[in-house]
Amino acid sequence: MTELTRSLVDAAADLLAAHGFRGLRMADVATRAGVSRQTVYNEFGNKERIVHAVALHKTEEFVDGVRRRLADTPDPVDGIREAARFVFDLAAKDPLSSSVLSGTNAEDMLPLVTTRGHAVLSSATDVFLEHVRRHWPWLPAERAELVAETVVRVALSHLLTPRHDGVRAVVLVATALLA
Image (cartoon, rainbow, N blue to C red; front, side, top):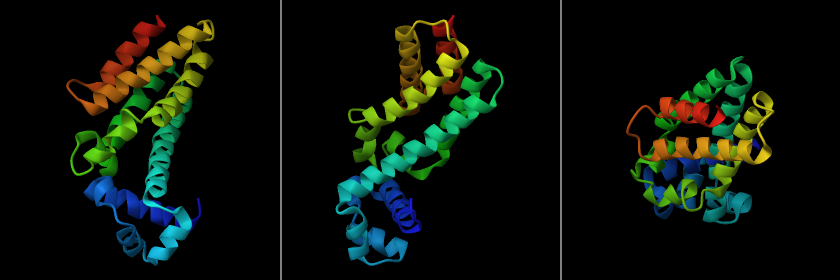
C-alpha cells in the first residue's frame, strides 16, 4: 500500500467510524487526507471501492495480529486464547470496529461482518485452520475446517453481541471441538 493509499484509507476509516457509509463523502476523505477530491477519485474511483479498501485493510490488521499470536505462543490452546484476546481488545479500541460492531454511527457498515462478511469469515477461518492443522494434524480435513469456521463464528458472535467473556467462550468452544 502506497503512502497516499494508506493516508486515504485511514482518513476514510475515521470518517466511516463517525458517519457510516451513507455519511461518507469523498470530499471529506480528501480534506482529511490533505489532497484534492480528484486524487481520491483517481486512487479509488468511487465510494464503494474506498470502503472495500478500508474493509480489506481492517481485516488484514486483525488477521495478521491473530496469525502472529497463534505462531508466537508455544502452547496451541494458549495461542487461541492470545489470538482471541487480541481480537476482542482491538475491536474495542479501534474506532471503526467498535462503531460497526456496536451499531453506533456506522450501523450501515454492519453487513461487512454479517450478511456480506464472507471475506472476513474466510480470511479468519483460513488463519485458524492453519493453526488447527499444524497442532492437530490427525484431525480429518473436514473436521478441522468445521472447527476453524465454528471458532471464528463464535468469536464474531461474541463481538457482535457481547454477553459473557468472549475470549473464554472462544477457548472453551475450541477446546471442546478439538477434544
